Amino acid sequence: MKVAKFGGSSVANAEQFRKVANIVTADPERKFVVVSAPGKRFKEDTKMTDLLILLAKKVIEEDVYEGVLAQVVARYDEIVTDLGLPRDILDVISSNLQQIIDTYADQPERLMDALKASGEDNNAKLMAHYLRHLGHEAHYVNPKDAGIFVTDEPGNAQILPQSYEQIAKLKERSGILVIPGFFGYSLSGHVVTFPRGGSDITGSIIAAGVHATLYENFTDVDSIYCVNPSIVENPCQLRELTYREMRELSYAGFSVFHDEALQPVYKLGIPVCVKNTNNPDAPGTFIVATRDHRHQPVAGIASDTGFCSINISKYLMNREIGFGRRLLQILEDEGISYEHTPSGIDNMSVILREEQLAGDVERRVLERIEKELQVDEVSIERDLALIMVVGEGMERSVGIAAKATAAFARANINIEMINQGSSEVSMMFGVKADAVERAVRALYEVYF
Ligand code: ASP
Image (cartoon, rainbow, N blue to C red; front, side):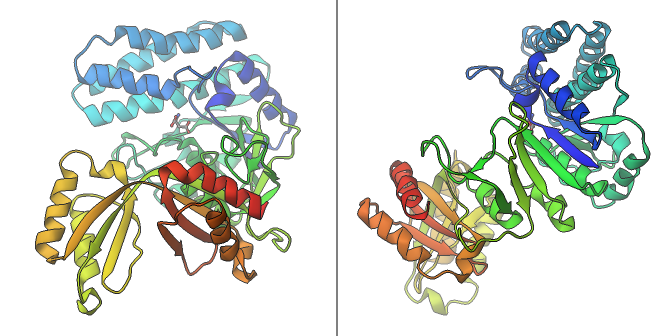
């Protein structure tokens, strides 16, 4: 049995719904279907989830929200009309939205999560409806009914381990089961969403729960590329990647697959196949436990901007027991998560996402570091980009780092930071954000 997850662009309009129905019904093993909310129909379009976030904000701010609500319903109306479905499903959708607004009007966090989740929820109802309309046995399954129970962290849910036992029971049901992505239920019965892009997580959870033979992740590209195609024209396509490689690449800006989505399938060794809804015959990219990397030690290059580095120096820092802990405690107190901590004898840097220092946070953090740690110097270096060179084969290959540093030198790019973990599955370079595209192209040249 396979789990097929369809991302936002795959379910953005009626034409895409038809493609999805063809794909699902072409293979009787595709029993579990997970859908996103309608995504963009064209480049400047707004995703349903963003529209719903806007709607929630209007309700919270007691602003006029009816116009946005009408826009939300209109998007489903367009799909219903184009597919020639009976219009009563639209009443179900409208009353569901109104009910959420009425129930949670004075609970902003709950309202936000419930409205965000409704994007996938109503789309799943619509997809099941359409499959039945075509004469197939299909059922919408609400995540509570499926057994997807999560931690009660609005917008940041994590699956609770006891869910899997109940999810396994879905195998006993008949027909195609259509499950909305992106959310689960807390034990107290509230809708709680995963982080953005989290429908991938739902698909993975279902695949793990039912012990699927394959988790197919349908999107709008033929395969995963070894580098961002908006930086390098026509880059090579990857046939196979390991879980660890995919995890590293998606962490550093490969938006094709959510970086938290691998964990459930990884544990059970269920392969993932990233495929194109618009070209389902293309083989796609398989994400598997091991691959033969003899001929291609490097699997991909990823990059992301928006980082900064807090640089701290203090004479004899290396002798001061507990310095690192106290520094990180300050960040923890502010709810800041950090990415890396490269260090020298008398200096230490903390690399983090720049947005976390917005408002007054930066001043507070710097003041505390100065006062409580009695440092000689503390400063912030902004506009950094991180580049990851990823590949399981690097562990056994000599000269991979040399190639990168030589490429940077030839392109006249200064390396701000280098980091390699003990797993040797990735190598990270920090460069100035304005040099990142040149740097990625230089690396592509040497590795591919
Ligand atoms: N619709 C949600 C988002 O846009 C989740 C998803 O599509 O995976 O983030």
